Image (cartoon, rainbow, N blue to C red):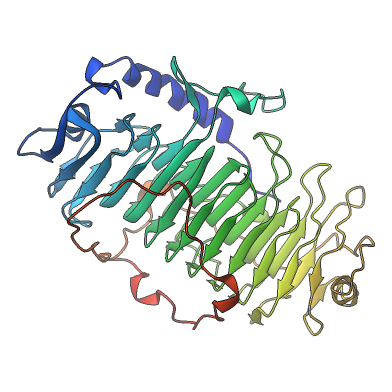
Length: 439
């Protein structure tokens, strides 16, 4: 898959800054006492100060305003909530690496906007130890022992807007049992939403809008019990990707459920330049195994609705494309896998257009249990990718809906209540369309 991986270098640089933050006030110790409720600016002048003062399990409410800071949450079960989603803005100014980073279990981030970070807007990560946040070696090929970095547990992103952030908008890495819902991301030079490096993830991504990024949603090596449903990915360079990557632990990526999403018209010109080789593609699967794509609307992609390829020596295998609606694509399914790493066992109903043409019959045969290597093409027509914009120049989104007020914040559950996939219908083409577009 032609999406370059810059994850390791980003984590190394940010980890240095996080480690400095972790050496700051002793009040950041998760065993310290503090207030159950801290309001900004009434009780604390900055969000960072409020996080220092809040108790584990407490609530930080941030009033309307632009906050030129970056926040590390290292106390469990803290809720960081904006008073007004569109008016509570954490602004990286194009110089600060991140907006909000949580390295503690059970944290909620909700009802606010994060913009202008050079790396990412909101990150949940278990990539830290008793000495503070850390990172794997930069070459990405030395074996990284995941047991040294146990995954973060229990997280929630709810009604968050992340726009014009340098790499990722909303990002869960080495984390389990979390939900990203009813949020918005645009203007990311890598991906608006990203879930990476976990096994038995227990992660639900639902009700989100991702547009005007290089990739709307990306998964690298996040496997088992990842459910992506009821989202709209449109106007990106690529709608979504499922990738295996040797730069992260747990290759290959496998067993995601992608059901009931609208993935349309991903050939956006007002997007950061990246992933040009797959520009105008709905879904890219590179080295992924046993993924299910069912009852999605995949439409308006001049290159391909679904594009299969390999990651180095990792083939794409066992993809099931069931009951999706393919319309207006250059071809519905294409296979660009290298001959040394052939795709096999990928299944789709008969009647789809494919590249090469004989792939269609092989996809249909695989639904009956065939596992033979599947025909690939070396060329796939499609539009030339436009030059792209700086991520800081991607137009800002229209105002997004606020999260209703809550009276209590109980501890997040240990596991996520997943939807009944069988009951999720093919979505209407206008799903979440009212929240797309610019100001």
